[in-house]
Length: 469
Image (cartoon, rainbow, N blue to C red):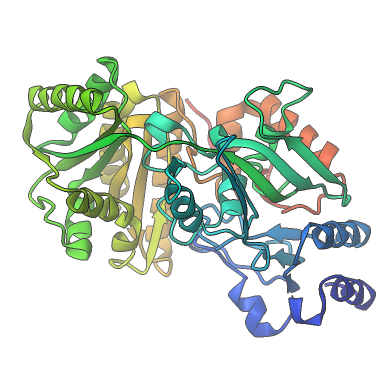
């Protein structure tokens, strides 16, 4: 609970209209997109600028009030669920595109900017911002930065951290720190910029970010490769990469996902196929033509029954939109949809796809698999019903097995969704005890009173939940 004195101080900083603590508002911000996680905050606070964020953090640090920074709530690891109460911090007043610097190829934004709005703004000026999370129509840049979001173009262009040049950050004690800047090179001290990206709101609040832009690609081409079996599709992914071709997009959907997405999007996906690959290349037109001809050849050698070239940008965009809608489409089938993002080296995709099918059968659950196969980031998605406790237990066991298998193959428990609270029990699988302790030391140095998104990343139960045998 927030004391009367603390509440009045917080209201004096942001104004009464920007401090909400009605039961209705608390319920609205008690959960995010992660199933089965919900907890009421004590209040919802909406600062108007960096100075107010600084004063809020000073006050919360003084009274040891937990702070959960939140964008649009699309988090899939319970990262924005206010597990320990406190305040949910919104950025609805801080949503400006501050500057598009055409000389330095940068854009500077506040955390509340919707991703797609920023992308459209820079593309109008002929520039390109590659990170493209599937939630880009609703996700905020602050959320992308805190989760180090990826997307369909991650294979060729990387993830959010690869485009962050500088930050304005408010630390838990209220100090305002500037990191990086509009610089091609900067090795002055520790790289605080990269440390803060992906920190899930546990180290500080990003109030401004300067991002790198690149020129728009000259040309683009999209194909859909159709397969009668999963492993041929997975082997195609490995073969394309081993042939030294890095497509912009190399996406995978299994038959269960194809059927649901086609029913939802109606773009002509082949519902009889066991798997499809959505492949795209961009760049100079001669490179695109050469690469796509080779990719088509590889797919056919790997037993693709057809390789269909999109005949227009509208057709290509329909295919991309259909892939982005996979989670929404699947969510219509059962009351509870749990999406994960186990990631393995690209060369291990075929083994991971095969393992997921075996795990599905072992635990008698329904798993639809899609994802960014080109960078090894698969999204096994369980369709279940949280009210069926026996089935939900089998789902949890299936995901534990998937995480263990991913680690065995040299992978990780999350490629882009973050650890949050949902995956915190599995972090030690990836990092080991010493690695987790090193991270805890960083957290302690930044946030000794543990007010920044407490309960996230680090499991409450310090014991390993899973042992790799």
